[in-house]
Length: 365
Image 1 (cartoon, rainbow, N blue to C red):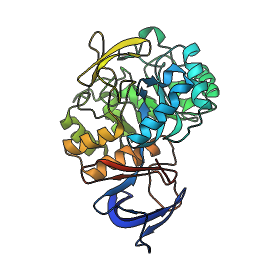
Image 2 (image 1 turned 90 degrees about the vertical axis):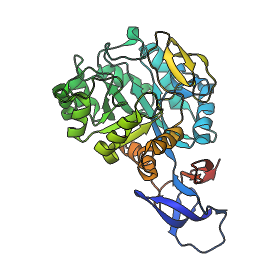
Image 3 (image 1 turned 90 degrees about the horizontal axis):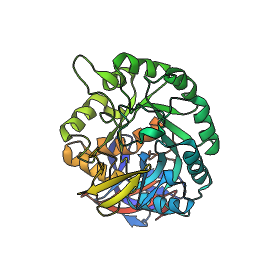
């Protein structure tokens, strides 16, 4: 495949160039030939990488339902995500284990690539549990993590933990040798969060949400993440975070900013009643809440988040990097970059950021 005349995202900026690929990218530059696709006036960017997504189109990774995984892979690809981490909720081990098995055994027939698992819980704080079910919370327990990771075939790439909980620091120290450890759903103050980062955590789950506020005398997890050089996530649906805070956070964290969808099974679905980790949720005007009004995850795609932050004032370059290269680097994935020899996971967007084409491993979907 040869795409001609594209505005190609290389590194951190756009360059006018052609790109040739089969399963991997074979050449970039001014290339001979008429080409298979004329992308004049269009952007070619890396496929998006969503490291925090629970589900969409009526399906949820925590269900442990093998038949629900292909529709999810198809949905992600159709909305510009070429790699994702299947993200689970705070649930009992007997519920999480079959979910691990289903993800381990999934072999997609087209669609986006399941690059691993994000265990968002059950090792979280009661006070900052958000939409996670309180009865399923569990103290940080490395043995439980290892059982779940073994059940997944070693596919856990990211785990969220509240670092103030009993046993959290040795948990972080041990598991940071296995996967990326993230601080989240936590009441930690600055010093406690710094202890978590010093123990080996390198990431923060949905910054601002599920943690103490960033205050001038109490900077908390947010200040500690900056000082520790951690990567951070933001849910950019326009509901979880004010656009001004998104602009400020982008300036503060720069290339360490990761856009996520934190999408639930209601993504790609109409308003109505749904379920999240055994709890009923209501979606009204695309806003998902528990019955008591607690804000749950989102109903957006990651490409929606890219469009939103550009509309909020971030450059397209910053938005693309934060939704592709940065999250791939945060969890150690070989994705999110356009370079010779890398996987040909590519999107073609027009000037309005409408999705025109998706390629996964060089195959147009």
